[in-house]
Amino acid sequence: MDIKKNDILKLKITSMTAQGNGAGKTDEGIVIFVPMSAVGDELEVRILKVKKTYAYGKIEKILKPFESRIETDCPNFGKCGGCVYRHIDYNSELEIKHQRVSDALERIGGFKNIKINPVVENERVLRYRNKAQLPAQNTENGVELGFYANRSHRIIPCDDCLLQPKVFKKVMDITRDFMQKTSQSAYDERTGRGTLRHLYIRYAEMTDELMVCYVVNSIGLKQEDVLIKKLKENLPNLKSVIINSNKENTNVILGSKNRTAYGKDYIEDILCGKRFKLSPLSFYQVNRAQAEKLYEIAKNYADLKGNEILLDLYCGIGTIGLSMADCCKKLIGVEIIEDAVKDAVRNAEANETENAEFICGNASYALNRLKKDGVKPDVVIVDPPRKGLDEELIKTISQMSPDRVVYVSCGPETLARDLRIFSDNNYSVKEITPVDLFSRTSHVENVCLLIKNKRS
Ligand code: SAH
Image 1: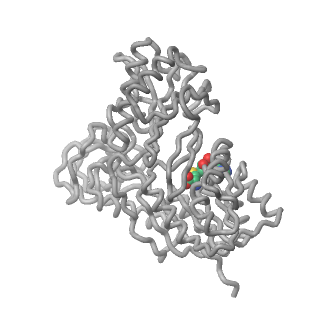
Image 2: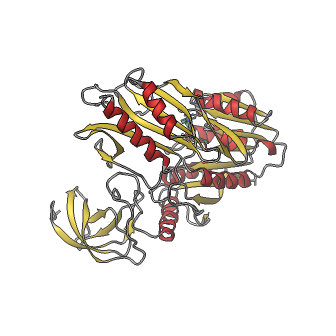
């Protein structure tokens, strides 16, 4: 390849990657990936990194911007590893996300004519998140909190992230100030010394309840009472302060031990008209308002008439299944995290749902057990992490022969791969609806309806 680092060249952006980078080809056919660009941009690009068949560059100068380029509104855009579309108007972002889904289905799944509905819009593109996990680091100015730069453990200090509620900034300020005044330091992953690893904040917007969780490399912080007093004085909606101990040398953020330093061991939110208890270790959708729309679509796809057995695999605290439990005969949820299962059980009780059962375990094992026990679900919902489903699990679902499968996915590429396996195992993809849960980032959620093929 005859380009090298620091070369400056002209480039027209002609496509977007799944990660949200623009891409264009040089005259020699070498693909250059450029963050913060978009299709139609004509750029002067500085080459940063050269690989065998492609290279990375950054915008040196915009010669001609694509038509829906907008001024970015965040000083950390392009640095913090969060947003990738702050330079694009929202409609164009939705089009890019739709394209990503249809590209994945075609290229990875080999599907050509699947109905992909328009991406369901987020009404609140700013401050829609209800959760932040902010790493702490020691700097010349004391303990800093922020976000890791893309693919690194270098912290980008962040005063006020535009995706987070304003109250999170207050918690960050109080925490920094407390660490400074009590001369405590952040955990240093190279030496294993220091205390504070992460500040983890959760906000339940329908009840206005706030949880603050400190992830520490010990059993607690010095002078916790001082910290709690300060938090209480400044945050009238504070309902829970948790100390989470994580003494492992690991990238996993949360340890398994929680101690409640103030208030309750959970906060509660309302979703689809039901109350949900959220413990620190349990998964909860970060965009509540959009999650409601997602679940509504999933419910339409499930098309329950009242007599069905509904299986909710990867159920977390039970949100999807419990939002539909009134419409079926029996709900069985499966989830691997014990605290989440406990929350799910408590949530069923709190919502007076008597037809729900939750199993703690690996979805694949639990499903095999259910099959051996002769359970015959009519509808199966799956909502796995980004890596998607195992082929074996898909085959087991197919053998259990539900009429419908509703697949909720946060990874279009693994969804496409798995839908192909479902297609090879007697299920047809009916339609897909992408939902924008993570505006301004590259992520896009999808909900897909699969129907069992009729025997010919
Ligand atoms: N459906 C829930 C949670 C979705 S997130 C909601 O919408 O809120 C995915 C969930 O799968 C997480 O709660 C995670 O703990 C769980 N999980 C991850 N791997 C699992 C596995 N192998 N078996 C069962 N659950 C798993």
